[in-house]
Image (cartoon, rainbow, N blue to C red; front, side):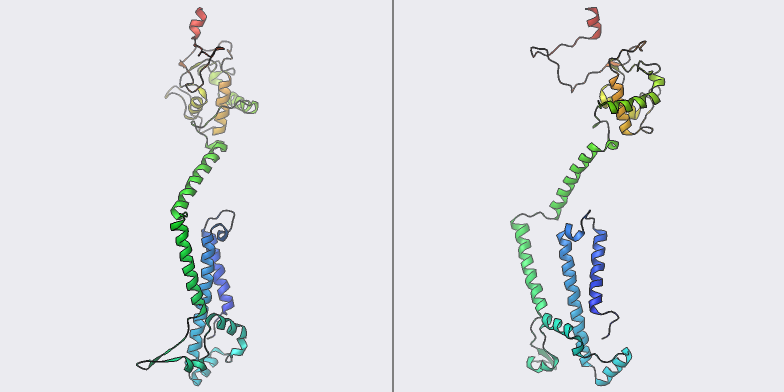
Length: 319
């Protein structure tokens, strides 16, 4: 029967629509989905095979239906379609392909295939299974055996295991990304900066935002002295970073700078503030808070290897 589009147009169009749809919905990164995921390639091959099989089946049904028509019906059909009756010789390549895939006998040889079975006037033909069906069955058996050996005997990774591996890898990649993504920094992973460029940037931020309360030299005015060893909310880069981010004590402490400065800028500012330790500015404000000690710092030892005894500033002054 006449179709709006021939088979050699329908099959490629449907195939590429399916391939494009898979590529659109499957996230495969920079690689095509059928390369990144072998199962996609297998599905596309099966889909292409299915399209060809459907075209063959439809063509066979149309051919049988056409031969069952009476001469008058054939003429009427040809007139309705406004095309002359197409002979087999006009489609030799198609006929050869059909013969290769189906190995079917011509209609005029039907008597040679007729069996003795007769069920209420319905007779049976001794047609062999078409080669495409046999090949598909053999391929399915081989695929099933390979699947069983790979996953059940050799312990291949199934979909759940692959998902767990990808999640673990994604977690590692995220942690690595956080190390190099400063704007994802927090008080737990912040580090002290000591390079001149970062300290210069921190000084510029300090002179713009902090001198009104802490003086230009860090000696303290409204805010506490930043150059001594006493800290109200703890010293060290992690505590200073947290204080700058979240602000000081409620009602009388410093404002939270997290809505004004970026995490990288707060890291630079905190590093600069800590660089002021021990500078002893003129007219520095008196100590506030407690002396902060880094519990994670390695213990100091003298030349003999004996742990050194720390002496408070007051005791050292009296001696």
